Image 1: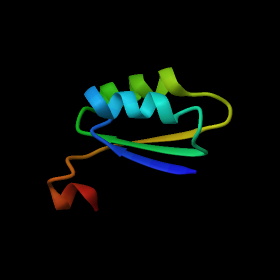
Image 2: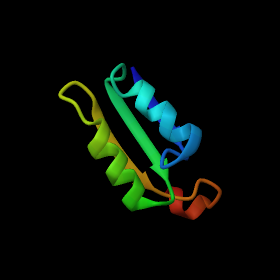
Image 3: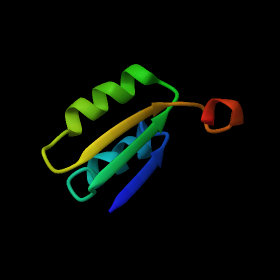
Length: 65
């Protein structure tokens, strides 16, 4: 299963990431705060799930390219 979560660095997005990490084969985390994303990815890493982080503002189309 592939899961993409925006707003993953805090709040509901962070909680969803924690819940999906053990279940997903690939977890893509997107948020504006790069350091918070890295910290979250380090917390969630296990041998089964591939976690990729992307620092971007999803309301700014140019940053999503």
